[in-house]
Image 1: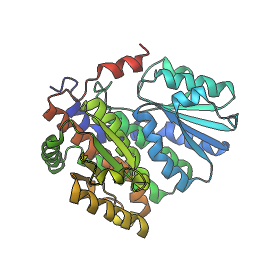
Image 2: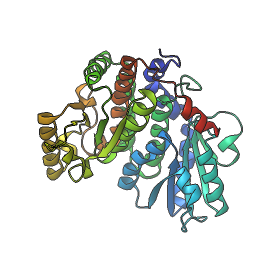
Image 3: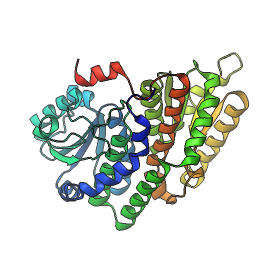
Image 4: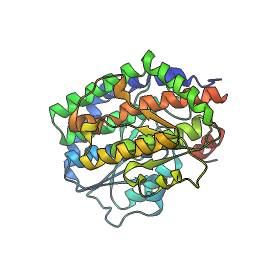
Length: 354
Protein backbone atom coordinates (compact mmCIF):
# COMPACT_ATOMS: atom_id res chain seq x y z
CA UNK A 1 0.00 0.00 0.00
CA UNK A 2 2.93 2.36 0.71
CA UNK A 3 4.35 2.29 -2.81
CA UNK A 4 6.65 5.32 -2.32
CA UNK A 5 8.11 4.07 0.98
CA UNK A 6 6.71 7.09 2.78
CA UNK A 7 7.07 5.43 6.19
CA UNK A 8 10.83 5.28 5.79
CA UNK A 9 10.95 8.94 4.72
CA UNK A 10 8.93 9.93 7.80
CA UNK A 11 11.38 8.07 10.02
CA UNK A 12 14.29 9.85 8.30
CA UNK A 13 12.88 13.39 8.49
CA UNK A 14 14.81 14.43 11.59
CA UNK A 15 18.06 13.10 10.16
CA UNK A 16 17.38 14.98 6.92
CA UNK A 17 16.95 18.26 8.82
CA UNK A 18 20.14 17.75 10.82
CA UNK A 19 22.07 16.65 7.73
CA UNK A 20 20.94 19.77 5.87
CA UNK A 21 22.30 22.08 8.55
CA UNK A 22 25.58 20.20 8.76
CA UNK A 23 26.26 19.88 5.04
CA UNK A 24 25.07 23.39 4.14
CA UNK A 25 26.39 25.28 7.18
CA UNK A 26 28.85 27.36 5.13
CA UNK A 27 26.15 28.39 2.65
CA UNK A 28 23.77 29.31 5.48
CA UNK A 29 26.40 31.39 7.27
CA UNK A 30 27.44 33.22 4.08
CA UNK A 31 23.85 34.10 3.18
CA UNK A 32 23.01 35.09 6.79
CA UNK A 33 25.85 37.62 6.82
CA UNK A 34 24.51 39.24 3.66
CA UNK A 35 20.92 39.68 4.83
CA UNK A 36 21.68 42.86 6.76
CA UNK A 37 22.43 44.57 3.43
CA UNK A 38 18.73 44.55 2.55
CA UNK A 39 15.79 46.63 3.77
CA UNK A 40 12.83 44.45 2.83
CA UNK A 41 12.26 40.72 2.51
CA UNK A 42 9.85 38.32 0.84
CA UNK A 43 9.51 34.62 1.65
CA UNK A 44 7.85 32.62 -1.11
CA UNK A 45 7.03 29.08 -2.19
CA UNK A 46 4.19 26.84 -3.34
CA UNK A 47 2.46 23.87 -1.70
CA UNK A 48 4.10 22.88 1.57
CA UNK A 49 7.08 25.11 0.70
CA UNK A 50 4.68 28.04 1.05
CA UNK A 51 3.67 26.72 4.46
CA UNK A 52 7.30 26.65 5.71
CA UNK A 53 7.71 30.46 5.61
CA UNK A 54 4.24 30.92 7.09
CA UNK A 55 5.76 29.23 10.15
CA UNK A 56 9.17 30.94 10.06
CA UNK A 57 7.74 34.45 9.73
CA UNK A 58 6.93 34.37 13.46
CA UNK A 59 10.59 33.72 14.29
CA UNK A 60 11.72 36.42 11.85
CA UNK A 61 9.42 39.03 13.38
CA UNK A 62 10.67 38.18 16.85
CA UNK A 63 14.37 38.43 15.95
CA UNK A 64 14.49 41.00 13.13
CA UNK A 65 13.16 44.54 12.91
CA UNK A 66 13.06 44.41 9.11
CA UNK A 67 9.74 43.86 7.35
CA UNK A 68 8.94 40.53 5.72
CA UNK A 69 6.01 39.45 3.57
CA UNK A 70 5.10 35.82 2.94
CA UNK A 71 3.61 35.55 -0.56
CA UNK A 72 2.63 32.44 -2.50
CA UNK A 73 4.82 32.11 -5.58
CA UNK A 74 1.90 32.25 -8.00
CA UNK A 75 0.59 35.41 -6.36
CA UNK A 76 4.05 36.96 -6.33
CA UNK A 77 4.54 36.20 -10.03
CA UNK A 78 1.20 37.76 -10.93
CA UNK A 79 1.19 40.68 -8.47
CA UNK A 80 4.73 41.86 -7.74
CA UNK A 81 4.70 44.47 -4.94
CA UNK A 82 5.68 47.97 -6.00
CA UNK A 83 8.33 48.15 -3.27
CA UNK A 84 10.46 45.37 -4.79
CA UNK A 85 13.84 46.77 -5.84
CA UNK A 86 17.56 46.15 -5.39
CA UNK A 87 17.21 46.57 -1.62
CA UNK A 88 14.74 43.66 -1.52
CA UNK A 89 15.83 40.09 -0.79
CA UNK A 90 13.49 37.28 -1.85
CA UNK A 91 13.95 33.83 -0.32
CA UNK A 92 12.27 31.03 -2.26
CA UNK A 93 11.65 27.47 -1.10
CA UNK A 94 11.19 24.62 -3.56
CA UNK A 95 11.74 20.91 -3.21
CA UNK A 96 12.10 20.12 -6.91
CA UNK A 97 13.80 23.39 -7.83
CA UNK A 98 11.62 23.42 -10.92
CA UNK A 99 8.19 24.45 -9.61
CA UNK A 100 6.57 26.53 -12.35
CA UNK A 101 4.99 29.09 -10.01
CA UNK A 102 8.28 29.64 -8.20
CA UNK A 103 10.36 30.00 -11.37
CA UNK A 104 7.86 32.55 -12.70
CA UNK A 105 8.02 34.54 -9.44
CA UNK A 106 11.83 34.57 -9.48
CA UNK A 107 11.86 35.96 -13.02
CA UNK A 108 9.47 38.77 -12.09
CA UNK A 109 11.28 39.98 -8.97
CA UNK A 110 14.68 39.74 -10.67
CA UNK A 111 13.38 42.11 -13.33
CA UNK A 112 12.97 44.69 -10.57
CA UNK A 113 16.47 44.12 -9.23
CA UNK A 114 15.74 41.95 -6.16
CA UNK A 115 18.29 39.46 -4.88
CA UNK A 116 17.00 35.89 -5.04
CA UNK A 117 18.00 33.02 -2.75
CA UNK A 118 16.57 29.53 -3.15
CA UNK A 119 16.40 26.82 -0.51
CA UNK A 120 16.03 23.67 -2.58
CA UNK A 121 16.56 19.92 -2.54
CA UNK A 122 17.45 19.91 -6.26
CA UNK A 123 21.03 18.83 -6.86
CA UNK A 124 22.97 19.65 -9.99
CA UNK A 125 22.19 22.23 -12.63
CA UNK A 126 18.95 23.62 -14.00
CA UNK A 127 15.85 25.11 -12.38
CA UNK A 128 16.51 27.61 -9.62
CA UNK A 129 20.27 26.96 -9.80
CA UNK A 130 20.39 29.12 -12.94
CA UNK A 131 18.55 32.03 -11.31
CA UNK A 132 19.37 32.19 -7.58
CA UNK A 133 22.01 31.87 -4.93
CA UNK A 134 21.45 28.38 -3.51
CA UNK A 135 21.19 26.86 -0.05
CA UNK A 136 21.00 23.12 -0.53
CA UNK A 137 18.79 20.89 1.59
CA UNK A 138 19.69 17.23 1.95
CA UNK A 139 17.42 14.25 2.51
CA UNK A 140 18.52 10.78 3.50
CA UNK A 141 16.39 9.46 0.64
CA UNK A 142 17.01 11.49 -2.52
CA UNK A 143 14.82 12.38 -4.19
CA UNK A 144 11.85 11.84 -1.92
CA UNK A 145 9.19 9.92 -3.81
CA UNK A 146 6.18 10.51 -1.55
CA UNK A 147 4.10 13.43 -2.82
CA UNK A 148 3.28 14.81 0.68
CA UNK A 149 6.93 15.56 1.44
CA UNK A 150 8.31 14.90 4.91
CA UNK A 151 12.10 15.15 4.98
CA UNK A 152 12.21 18.13 2.63
CA UNK A 153 9.58 19.92 4.71
CA UNK A 154 11.56 19.52 7.92
CA UNK A 155 14.87 20.24 6.16
CA UNK A 156 13.53 23.43 4.56
CA UNK A 157 12.05 24.61 7.86
CA UNK A 158 15.33 23.87 9.67
CA UNK A 159 17.41 25.74 7.09
CA UNK A 160 15.16 28.80 6.99
CA UNK A 161 14.99 29.00 10.79
CA UNK A 162 18.75 28.56 11.07
CA UNK A 163 19.29 31.29 8.49
CA UNK A 164 17.12 33.68 10.51
CA UNK A 165 18.85 32.79 13.77
CA UNK A 166 22.35 33.21 12.35
CA UNK A 167 21.41 36.59 10.84
CA UNK A 168 19.54 38.09 13.77
CA UNK A 169 19.50 35.71 16.74
CA UNK A 170 21.77 34.68 19.57
CA UNK A 171 23.64 31.58 20.63
CA UNK A 172 20.78 30.71 22.98
CA UNK A 173 18.37 30.66 20.05
CA UNK A 174 20.77 28.49 18.05
CA UNK A 175 21.08 26.03 20.94
CA UNK A 176 17.29 25.84 21.34
CA UNK A 177 16.90 25.24 17.61
CA UNK A 178 19.36 22.34 17.67
CA UNK A 179 17.56 20.85 20.66
CA UNK A 180 14.28 20.99 18.74
CA UNK A 181 15.84 19.30 15.69
CA UNK A 182 17.31 16.48 17.76
CA UNK A 183 13.86 16.05 19.30
CA UNK A 184 12.32 15.90 15.81
CA UNK A 185 14.78 13.12 15.04
CA UNK A 186 13.80 11.16 18.16
CA UNK A 187 10.05 11.67 17.65
CA UNK A 188 10.26 10.49 14.05
CA UNK A 189 10.93 6.95 15.26
CA UNK A 190 9.25 7.10 18.67
CA UNK A 191 7.24 3.92 19.26
CA UNK A 192 4.82 5.58 21.68
CA UNK A 193 4.02 8.36 19.22
CA UNK A 194 3.57 5.88 16.37
CA UNK A 195 1.30 3.75 18.55
CA UNK A 196 -0.73 6.82 19.49
CA UNK A 197 -1.11 7.84 15.85
CA UNK A 198 -2.27 4.39 14.81
CA UNK A 199 -4.82 4.14 17.62
CA UNK A 200 -6.05 7.69 17.01
CA UNK A 201 -6.38 7.02 13.28
CA UNK A 202 -8.49 3.97 14.11
CA UNK A 203 -10.80 6.16 16.21
CA UNK A 204 -10.94 8.73 13.41
CA UNK A 205 -12.15 6.05 11.02
CA UNK A 206 -15.53 6.22 12.79
CA UNK A 207 -15.92 9.58 11.00
CA UNK A 208 -14.58 8.53 7.60
CA UNK A 209 -16.45 10.52 4.98
CA UNK A 210 -16.94 13.49 7.31
CA UNK A 211 -14.80 16.58 6.78
CA UNK A 212 -12.25 17.19 9.53
CA UNK A 213 -11.36 20.59 10.99
CA UNK A 214 -7.70 21.17 11.88
CA UNK A 215 -7.24 23.99 14.37
CA UNK A 216 -3.99 25.77 15.24
CA UNK A 217 -2.93 29.05 16.78
CA UNK A 218 -0.11 31.44 15.76
CA UNK A 219 2.92 29.50 14.43
CA UNK A 220 1.01 26.22 14.82
CA UNK A 221 -1.72 27.25 12.38
CA UNK A 222 0.48 26.63 9.30
CA UNK A 223 1.08 23.08 10.58
CA UNK A 224 -2.69 22.64 10.84
CA UNK A 225 -2.91 23.95 7.28
CA UNK A 226 -0.32 21.43 6.07
CA UNK A 227 -2.08 18.61 7.92
CA UNK A 228 -5.43 19.44 6.33
CA UNK A 229 -4.56 20.66 2.84
CA UNK A 230 -1.59 18.41 2.11
CA UNK A 231 -1.41 15.44 4.45
CA UNK A 232 -5.18 14.83 4.56
CA UNK A 233 -6.00 15.91 0.98
CA UNK A 234 -2.97 14.48 -0.81
CA UNK A 235 -1.99 11.67 1.52
CA UNK A 236 -5.24 10.34 2.93
CA UNK A 237 -7.44 11.48 -0.01
CA UNK A 238 -9.97 12.79 2.48
CA UNK A 239 -11.76 16.12 2.92
CA UNK A 240 -10.46 18.51 5.58
CA UNK A 241 -9.98 22.21 6.21
CA UNK A 242 -7.73 24.27 8.46
CA UNK A 243 -8.83 27.10 10.74
CA UNK A 244 -6.87 29.63 12.77
CA UNK A 245 -7.68 29.48 16.47
CA UNK A 246 -7.70 33.27 16.55
CA UNK A 247 -10.69 33.37 14.18
CA UNK A 248 -12.43 30.22 15.33
CA UNK A 249 -14.90 31.69 17.81
CA UNK A 250 -16.07 34.16 15.17
CA UNK A 251 -16.85 31.56 12.54
CA UNK A 252 -17.01 27.78 12.85
CA UNK A 253 -18.10 27.66 16.46
CA UNK A 254 -21.66 28.06 15.18
CA UNK A 255 -21.41 24.62 13.63
CA UNK A 256 -22.20 23.33 17.10
CA UNK A 257 -25.63 24.95 17.17
CA UNK A 258 -28.41 22.44 17.74
CA UNK A 259 -29.98 22.91 14.32
CA UNK A 260 -26.72 21.87 12.65
CA UNK A 261 -26.89 18.09 12.72
CA UNK A 262 -23.40 17.51 11.29
CA UNK A 263 -20.91 17.60 14.15
CA UNK A 264 -17.55 17.53 12.40
CA UNK A 265 -14.44 16.14 14.09
CA UNK A 266 -11.98 18.74 15.35
CA UNK A 267 -8.22 18.06 15.41
CA UNK A 268 -6.72 20.57 17.83
CA UNK A 269 -3.00 21.36 17.89
CA UNK A 270 -2.58 21.92 21.62
CA UNK A 271 -0.04 24.61 22.59
CA UNK A 272 1.62 24.61 25.97
CA UNK A 273 -0.37 26.91 28.31
CA UNK A 274 2.76 28.93 29.09
CA UNK A 275 2.92 30.01 25.44
CA UNK A 276 -0.48 31.74 25.59
CA UNK A 277 -1.88 34.96 26.95
CA UNK A 278 -4.55 34.66 29.62
CA UNK A 279 -7.23 35.54 27.07
CA UNK A 280 -6.01 32.89 24.61
CA UNK A 281 -5.86 30.25 27.35
CA UNK A 282 -9.47 31.00 28.26
CA UNK A 283 -10.57 30.83 24.63
CA UNK A 284 -8.79 27.52 24.13
CA UNK A 285 -10.46 26.00 27.17
CA UNK A 286 -13.88 27.16 25.93
CA UNK A 287 -13.30 25.62 22.51
CA UNK A 288 -12.16 22.29 24.00
CA UNK A 289 -15.09 22.20 26.42
CA UNK A 290 -17.77 23.07 23.86
CA UNK A 291 -16.44 20.69 21.20
CA UNK A 292 -15.84 17.71 23.47
CA UNK A 293 -19.41 17.99 24.78
CA UNK A 294 -21.04 17.99 21.34
CA UNK A 295 -18.65 16.61 18.73
CA UNK A 296 -15.50 14.48 18.26
CA UNK A 297 -12.30 16.11 19.52
CA UNK A 298 -8.76 14.87 18.84
CA UNK A 299 -5.75 16.50 20.51
CA UNK A 300 -2.29 16.74 18.91
CA UNK A 301 0.29 17.44 21.60
CA UNK A 302 3.89 16.37 20.92
CA UNK A 303 4.88 17.35 24.45
CA UNK A 304 3.17 14.19 25.65
CA UNK A 305 6.07 12.33 24.01
CA UNK A 306 9.04 14.64 24.55
CA UNK A 307 10.57 17.52 26.44
CA UNK A 308 11.54 20.65 24.57
CA UNK A 309 12.64 24.23 25.27
CA UNK A 310 9.99 26.23 27.08
CA UNK A 311 8.94 29.86 26.92
CA UNK A 312 9.17 31.96 23.80
CA UNK A 313 11.86 29.85 22.15
CA UNK A 314 9.85 26.66 22.58
CA UNK A 315 6.75 28.38 21.26
CA UNK A 316 8.32 29.69 18.05
CA UNK A 317 10.44 26.61 17.28
CA UNK A 318 7.94 23.90 18.28
CA UNK A 319 5.93 23.70 15.01
CA UNK A 320 8.49 21.19 13.74
CA UNK A 321 7.40 18.83 16.54
CA UNK A 322 3.72 19.13 15.61
CA UNK A 323 4.76 18.40 12.02
CA UNK A 324 6.10 15.00 13.09
CA UNK A 325 2.95 14.05 14.97
CA UNK A 326 0.50 15.16 12.28
CA UNK A 327 2.38 13.39 9.48
CA UNK A 328 2.31 10.08 11.38
CA UNK A 329 -1.40 10.60 12.03
CA UNK A 330 -2.18 11.18 8.36
CA UNK A 331 -0.03 8.22 7.32
CA UNK A 332 -1.94 5.77 9.51
CA UNK A 333 -5.31 7.31 8.62
CA UNK A 334 -4.51 6.83 4.92
CA UNK A 335 -3.56 3.18 5.43
CA UNK A 336 -6.72 2.49 7.40
CA UNK A 337 -8.73 4.04 4.58
CA UNK A 338 -6.99 1.67 2.18
CA UNK A 339 -5.23 4.37 0.14
CA UNK A 340 -1.57 4.88 -0.71
CA UNK A 341 -0.35 7.74 1.55
CA UNK A 342 2.44 8.90 -0.75
CA UNK A 343 0.90 8.63 -4.21
CA UNK A 344 -1.03 11.51 -5.81
CA UNK A 345 -1.25 11.59 -9.59
CA UNK A 346 -2.94 14.98 -10.03
CA UNK A 347 -0.48 16.93 -7.87
CA UNK A 348 2.39 15.36 -9.78
CA UNK A 349 0.92 16.65 -13.04
CA UNK A 350 0.46 20.15 -11.64
CA UNK A 351 4.00 20.32 -10.27
CA UNK A 352 5.48 19.22 -13.57
CA UNK A 353 3.50 21.85 -15.45
CA UNK A 354 1.44 19.28 -17.37
